[in-house]
Amino acid sequence: MIIRSGQDNSLKPPEEVDHIVELRPVSCARCGHLLEGSDPQPARRQLSEVPPVRAEVTEYRRHALTCLGCGALTQAEWLAEMPEGAFGPRAQAIIGYLTGRLGTSHRDVVEVMEVLHGLELSTGSVPAIQRQVSGALAKEILT
Image (cartoon, rainbow, N blue to C red; front, side):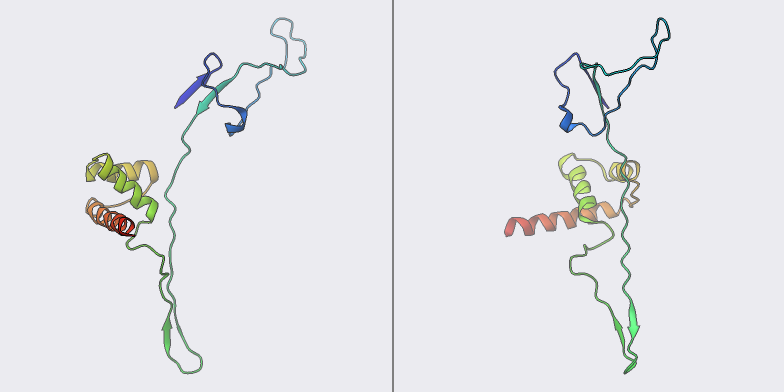
């Protein structure tokens, strides 16, 4: 968490701020009289926070239907762009980054994905995902 105060030059400009909370006193601290108006130069303080992230789960359902004309059973095809395995490209990229670039252990990768993203995976799935990422990168390099 980063806190920026008005006393340094690291304040982000208003167009880069997601939320502004205006804090105005209601009554005078000395006499209790009602206060109105706006301060043209209010003291500013900014707080940066990482939003909560939870893995998004998509379930694909491949239906098989019986033809009313001839009785043949026809099953839908899986989407061509659907990734192999149970984890999508962003999850695979994070796992590849953690293991490849940062050298994080498989056990720690499992913990990070659970704690930060609510994503459950087994320790044994980490090397399988690493192979998928390596294969995708090799294809990208060759093209």
